[in-house]
Image 1 (cartoon, rainbow, N blue to C red):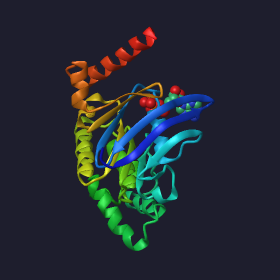
Image 2 (image 1 turned 60 degrees about the vertical axis):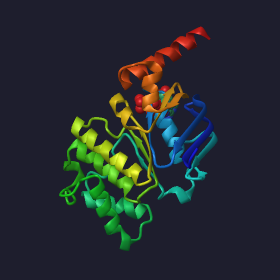
Image 3 (image 1 turned 90 degrees about the vertical axis):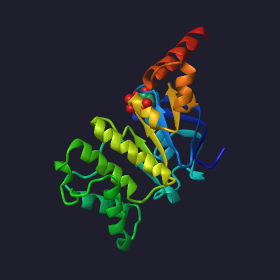
Length: 247
Ligand SMILES: Nc1ncnc2c1ncn2[C@@H]1O[C@H](COP(=O)(O)OP(=O)(O)OP(=O)(O)O)[C@@H](O)[C@H]1O
């Protein structure tokens, strides 16, 4: 096994007095795109929150880039994009990115270049001086992504980054994710869109706070004999439900 960006062992998370995740083991190899799939409520966001170190009531081991999750030294090294846009609608694209760069501790001298690079990566050139509140939905989600990219993080944790985007934008974003991985970045990306699963190096399939499979897209299709990722995923979930019924 090569280097790991994320190592989760025996993870337990309690939310609202309920065990949401228990006994979870997850690994994200460095320089790869790992897809996090699972039915709504299976714990994907909760796992991501534990990995970025913002989740309370966590037990077990969560190691990120060799450090315990949430360590101050990880602040610039990990980028997190939540499902809700977390940028300021009354500021322009540049003002937002400059602010997030400052938050990440990038010196005033280096901020301009960091911001320009993030704008470039998400292809928002020409919109720099536009107020974020006037951007289209797809542009808005790319600003959130740029805000996470501005510190040039080694690990990107993206919670359903393609929700609500049209097929062309979704394809462009996945091309960008693959490009980042080729440059050595690690990405953990949750999604409900199964055809996106085939773009990942590995897939983590979650169900009710546990891991159902850690598998390559090719092996998933082969194992289930399904013609596409969507049906393969449903076959795995059905198989799990049947086993559950037999237990
Ligand atoms: N603050 C909270 N208090 C109590 N329960 C919570 C809280 N936040 C989440 N949960 C529960 O934890 C479970 C996992 O939620 P989580 O958001 O991690 O799922 P998910 O797989 O990301 O879902 P989705 O795909 O719908 O975003 C759900 O059953 C949810 O109701």
